[in-house]
Image 1 (cartoon, rainbow over the protein chains, first blue to last red):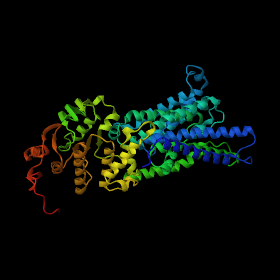
Image 2: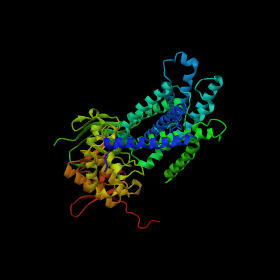
Image 3: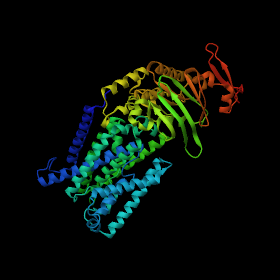
Image 4: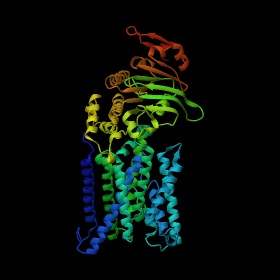
Length: 333
Length: 265
């Protein structure tokens, strides 16, 4: 038996970084035109690096949060987007940008803090509505998530109609499907990166216990895990990580759903290996999807800018249906 | 010999009707105790109460210390629990299920020590699971799977095993194998076993002591001969039961008074 020691931990994190670097390079190749992978123009170079790093940050956050949600909810269909958490955070982040609000009583609260509040509110709502006798019904959970998403979308469109020129809003399309903004301030990205980084380390520190969270409550308790406390920590920290990311991107769907499953195919079920690899896949794949979206827009394959959420939705939607079908088939056995 | 467990005055209700009424019991190191009683008599509840999964009126002391004074991790190193239907992911490998038993010993980031790995491999060898370590759980027979779950409990290196109907999904051969293993662990490693069971005859054969629970009360406890009294059992189980004894060891055997139909229509 290969025991999980510091060496294994560092090797797995290293493998994750390698996966991200390979996918990131691939992404630069997709994004490049005649200028090659490393453009000579420093402005183009800086822009491309920034956008790849931002996509990687958001993807990493969604990939890791999705893994933890799936573990603590014991539900392979859980994903920050489908649960309505992403849209809750995005809506709160948008509300923060309301000039009147941010200049007034809420000026002291950062955008990330607001997005986090929105994410938690969405989580609380989804759980309150989908729980029955202390048990969460997986399909009800998803249904409530969809409805919370729809309501959040409507509120956003209403606010957007009232206040069209809000800076950084990116238009209605971006909110509904999510996309990476180029006009986000650097301080916001740094704040998001710090939140995601700290959150990720906390999630990694509980990754061993997340293996036990897959068991029944009684079994987990008799294995020395305070399961309720673990669920709360997992839920709050994942929501914080999600909120920090979607505050700069809007609710990008399915990355948090697909990446844990892809990672499972590579490293198996152990959450200690799963979390770093899923994070790396999230970072790399979202960067590639974003580069592909920009490439399509650049080549006039589409008439206007194509938010990355369109591509992740097109690829992730069928994947979700496949998973749902498999889950139902397994349950019927 | 001092008790591993001392519990008294245990009263518990999920709703208004008490499921446990003033229950008291002690467990000694190395004894195998069978917890008997009809469905709904409180067997599972009693086990969960002893583990601290349910809050209860009364006193529970494990190894001389109040249950509430135990940290969860420390208690998990003392007592292991196997529920009626253990949870597992079908794709999970046997080795991954076994190593979960070391969770109470893991450090932050789930870091395992060399002792963790050594214990897992030793228990796998003891339960003849060494060749199955990489096999997914859904490709095991019921007997093999139950052995894996017992293995997970033993990997915790506990002093006590609380098992809730561990024989439920096992055929006769595997039931005997499991009970023989539990007796061996009790004798060789002084592990205390408390096992809820519906099989009175298997309990009589393998347990040092029987506890009969009825309507949330312990109505009798002691050796098989004292507890397996047909009048008492008939009353508790609500069925006409008779008793005979094995020729060699005079062990009691309980059977139904009503003859079985010769032909099933």
